[in-house]
Image (tube, rainbow, N blue to C red; front, side, top):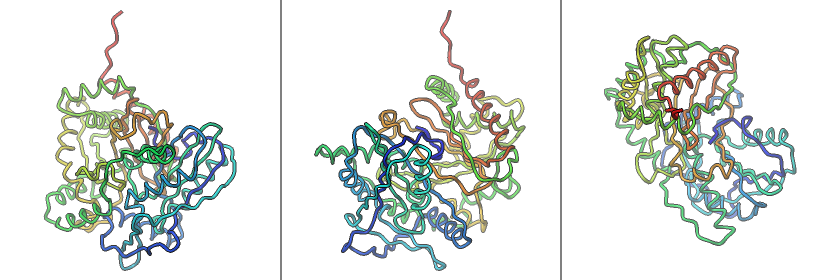
Length: 454
């Protein structure tokens, strides 16, 4: 599945209908909820609050688009989406950011409606612009709802767009939306029951995570590990090995390995005690050494925190950050760097459960990630086998951060894809184009596919 800004997605022309959540008239008022925001949610809202106070608009949404056959039954789709909203409590929960703190209020199931607005028919360019404006405007994390839906009717099919502020979802959550909504829609149009398993509430997870994190104090070994990591990078979080400058962000999405090549890399990585993930990370480090002359590869690594079965298919922001620092000498080869990366990620895995924001709090630092890596294996995501039929894509907003570099390594049945976000500067475009080419070359060289004889 492609993970890209809307500008990188093939928007098909058609008639657009917007579906906006609202509180049903006569329904229960949104009631105060003592469960606190997750650390990552609170940090996200405080940044949004500060930007609003400064008069700076900054979208922070994630979303998905997928195509279903036939003409849309909007009423059935509304019922399906309302069932989906009832399924995931975070979509009925409101976070308010004030000078006194972040406070939660929550709606019970059945209290949300969907208002329909038909916008008319648009060509590709105008529709893409209108959709991006819609998503930017109506996914404000400081208000409810912080998500919106759009349906675009084509001659023989229709595309469903779902856009939600990041406070509601992570990348993995976005990947599950197409299957859940399409199954709920099919149940509404056919009258057959839908077989979606039960899920836990991210609101409950956030509360439990905060209770656990408050027990982590300044003498915890994870705090010491982060402190040492900062010291090893001059007291700051690491940036990309070469200075890229600062500018509004751009991005790219490209295939690095096909399915056969990915299988070869996995086999070689496992033969040396690693995994496909650590093998891929080792290749990033080797490519940085070769292309940028970097003897130390330092970055932050995102890892999921879905630690129990009830969170597996739950909508929420289940992500933690861990430090990654690997020395790469001029004579180091794939097995050696793989061993170092594997040891690092194994040691750091338990650190993901401690929110990065809690670590920063205990260190007394205002820490902003600058170079972040993420790996996602999509092959077992529910519905992954139907993504091609749905022409499904994961979408993200433009980023307001001028100097960040984010790299997502995404494995699917097609192979390994790289999605990247970085400053739109001449230096970044030149350096990263060469670096990504080098990464692809190192990946293939590290696990060449045997060629048939003759």
